[in-house]
Length: 263
Ligand code: KIV
Image (cartoon, rainbow, N blue to C red; front, side, top):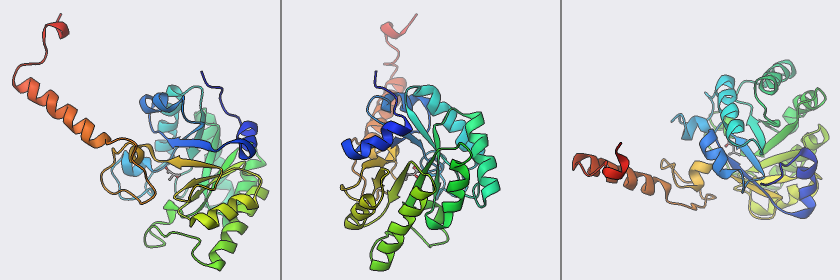
């Protein structure tokens, strides 16, 4: 069995090897991912792929706690990151109260919050009160409505400067690693070089310190849309639909159950 990553080994990985992060929302899949992934993210993306909503914004803290407990139960040997949902860290007091709730009600190893320079004081407040924080900079899914969609970042010199300032600010505030999403590859590479902690990319090219993908995207289970950065490692939707159609067909023809499935 793989050794569980720790904050120390995750930080050290920056110099050694790319980190593998994947999302999971339940015990079943978390257990399947455990041996290949260094870190499992209970992302608020579950609001879209699991709960069928248009964006992540209506995910609740209770939902995140429920799914984090399920993931931790399935992958007992994994480093688990719990996403703080939209509206739960608007100020230092709310952020700390809600992150403490996550730490007290789940075995999650850290929380993840979206934002850079603007959230540095909140990251600092959490880390100085015993909550480990993974940052999230670049394209912020929780800004989907306020920005009018998903906007790739790092297209101008100004955006590059501001991404580097974001990364440095949350590192300084105590984040032990960060996700960088939807950023031009050359800019993401510079951001990764500008800090000492690992910068894990999604839609941010190969020259960062690791990769994260949403499991339902990479297994081809989520059919609504596929972002450019997703590689489908499986045509999951097709396989599942074929299997269920096959089952339905056999039920109708009374070909299932056969003798070996019968008491
Ligand atoms: O919610 C999520 O799954 C995420 C990833 C996109 C990094 O934050």
